[in-house]
Image (tube, rainbow, N blue to C red):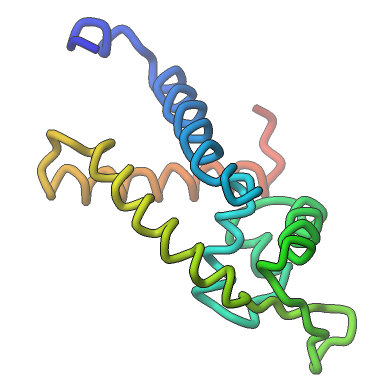
Length: 152
């Protein structure tokens, strides 16, 4: 896309394109493992933090607990996650990755790094750092707006 076409896009259009195309690429990569991109996101956090609860996952992803529960059920059914009752809270479960999940997570990490390099091609390290900081701020602002029930 040349600079004139790029300038014609609003921020909302750019975010929409990034989200849609990123989701398509991620889902396509995960399809061979029978997973969605969302499930891989949950699996990544479970591998990084064995014993994490479904509620903590929902908070990390800023998504409804029911949606997380449904995704985790699928991951358990496919042999990627093991659920254990939390000894401190019998209503809650702790989530642990299986060996199959750890192996997949390592492959997905490499894939994610490759995609990120391609997406940030032509950017300096400083631009990439700034982009990450700004995206984190946008994410926090959107979450805050939703928490406060702000009418969009």
